[in-house]
Structure formats: C-alpha cells, structure tokens
Length: 162
Image: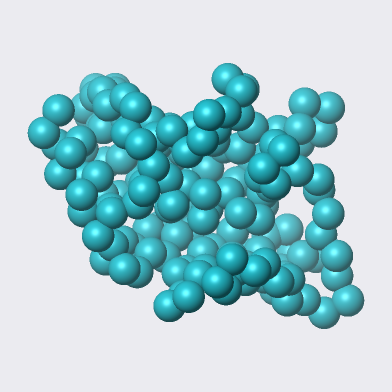
C-alpha cells in the first residue's frame, strides 16, 4: 500500500515529535489513566504527566538510553506491563519509536473515514497498532499489544510530527 509506505518514510525521517494523549494502562486487575505529553530531545525524550493533578509535573527523561525521573517528593510506580519494562510513562516514546523504526507488519483502511491503521512490530512479543487520519501523519489512537493482549491504549489529543 503506497500511502502506508509514504507515511512510514515520513515518520522515519521526523526529527521532532510532540504528542499529548490520554493513556490507559490495563494491568488486568487494575487500570490506570493518565494524560501525558511527550517531546523529543536532541539526545532522547521527555514525558510529563499532566493528569491526574496530584502527579502533574512528574517527568521521565531519557537521555542516551538512561532513564531519569524528575519530580518533587513524588514516586510513580505502577509496575511494568512487559518483561522489557513497558509502563505508562514510556507508552508515547514506544509508539513514536515504533513509527520511526518498527517493522511495518500490517496496513489497512478503517472506518467510514478510511483512516489508515498501521501495525508495527517492535519486538517478538510487542506490537504498536496506530490509527492515523487519512492522508496525514496525525495519529488518532494507538494500542500497544504484548503477547497478543492490548495493555496500553492511547487517545491522542494533539500531535506535531516534523
């Protein structure tokens, strides 16, 4: 599918990505909801919690592969959703990295608007399926799937991909 290839090439060449999304993490027996904002940095990325309000201001920063939390007297520990360390705080970077360098496993048109759904393999057990606005690189929603189970749901509020 030519549109999928063009979109994948554009995403792979992006040097600046800013995303804001409502993120739902499903741990089976418990569910967490956050509003997160992500921006790429020259050497990594930063994710800030916007909601819930009591965690607002907590940031996770990845620079050259090292993850660092920035906060004032707050600790966020929801646990990992996969053995590879997948958690709500890195959901947006995992999705963005999949768009840029994941293996495109599936592409199809979805819904009456004919939006483009792309599924990227990130590893042997992890996939990122994203619905993009037809004819653009604007993501509408995404699921991060581990061992066939959707564990993170992202509903994008805004996206800038350059």
